[in-house]
Image 1 (cartoon, rainbow, N blue to C red):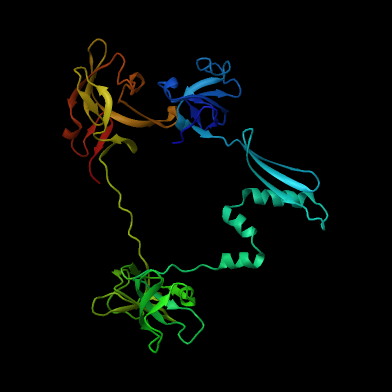
Image 2 (image 1 turned 180 degrees about the horizontal axis):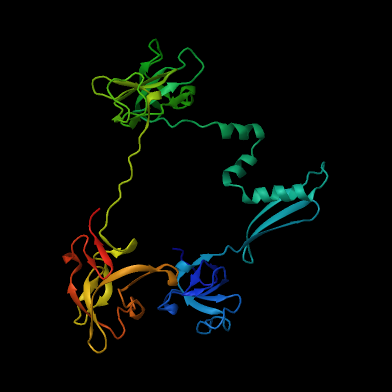
Length: 386
């Protein structure tokens, strides 16, 4: 949830503290302690009816209202202003009344001034990234070189295919060690007659002509076809034990400690599905009603702390019992889907911050951990396992 600050421009998403103010805009005049038990105070641009007030003198008459942050969204207060003096075009980015960024476009003495071209150029420069700005300062040829040249990061333990235009093109080597100025390597295939030693300088052309393999030892892959491997069937998840050279059919990988090679065309990288942690909780029909055992601010009539899922008996002012009910946490539509913790059946009398229940008295009957999976109390069902 966004942390609003005094002075922010905001818009109501749907309802605001129980009133239909969807789309209404205003300015934040209070947040935090000054708003309790609410979260935020807003001075709306126009009066909002009989339920508007002055927010303790911080808002205009009939324009103020307390509410919750979750019911609001920030209204961007930015604008771009473009002006010209006939030779130079200036673009300014404002936040409120403050200029936070500028950019200019100057007309060449050899060209005829055109405001449309100057405005478009100044605007593009105003919103361009630092990299684009750096590239613009270079010549076109140098900029294209920087954009299109990406030196590979050589890593120890990885295999590379040599893409250089020479007799060793397509050869495969594995980098085994790195020191301050060189890389050591061993030849895997296609360079058997190499006679230039077992290392190369980090600054040598070779370092810029190595292309890393798409797959690495240890990668998990899923078999999607089977045109050459008899050691894995379609649908199997296997771990690559060795990655060999590339050829016209793709990378060849070993998927078994002894043998069993598979071509790239037969598999795809496998990503482990995310594991979700199940948390025991309450439901009312299909509506989530809080995590079982979560502490609350409520206490029963003899001072015992209460948690979500605790079973209580509730009594009116005449000590007449209304039976058993449950401590829950639910999203309330009339509060803009804000969550509230309360005693089921007497929500309107409950103050979750103070932990009070109005004129109702509650007595704890059973702890949340004594209620079995699937048991239903009031209209609330306990879900302890999938």
